[in-house]
Length: 308
Ligand code: F6P
Picture 1 (spheres, rainbow, N blue to C red):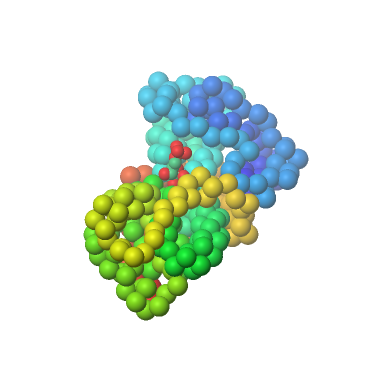
Picture 2: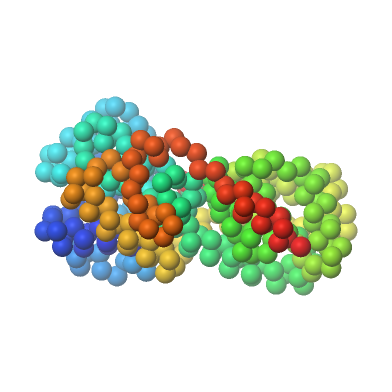
């Protein structure tokens, strides 16, 4: 996100705009927590994860009064356009502000990759690399002890992170919210992997799946599903959100941030700026919010095909 903030500020300045940073997300918007940003204020942030502006989940912004106050603050500060960097929740908010007549542009950013209007969103590549590093490290113990690891990755209700981690990490199986797999079937897949003389079994589990990593381990124990083999859960959690951003993420953030400024300047408001087939695109926010982004069935097939 910092790459996007840096790009917004510097692209804005190159258009002779005055750029303000809104601190702490929509909470900060409601409180008028703004600070004018110059080129140097966003120096040295591109290599830092997270957001220099801070973020917050705001209950007040979900009320009409909260949104009225947000617009009042923006107008009071003579702000003519707002760029919202974030995922589904943030873009529902930006859409609401746009419907109330305020010029906005969204930038597609969430590690979950569950936002329509962008093939991939800011943070995904970094989060995937964290998960892959973790799996590479886990494989040392897994191979030495011939253990199974259930590695849980984030993603909310979306299995994208788990699916891609599984494919790139050589998992014997992936467990996703989008696909119902009985633990007994999973046990069979793991057992067969050992029969094929695999030294270990990595199963990548999406946090939003019916059984998470702990749940699966409990179920396996209670039903004695993998007799003779040891298994352990490992929950990666928030470490996935804190890494040094990859080159792909820095470039994506930069491209989307700079393009969002163009949209504000040229009057193409109420859109999400995302990427499709390597090209920066815009999509009306109204078609993005509440839309479901399905997993690519080809990747599902590939995960299964390559887990041999
Ligand atoms: O949406 C990003 C995400 O990291 C999800 O993957 C995760 O489920 C959620 O946020 C965690 O939310 P919170 O930071 O509120 O605990």
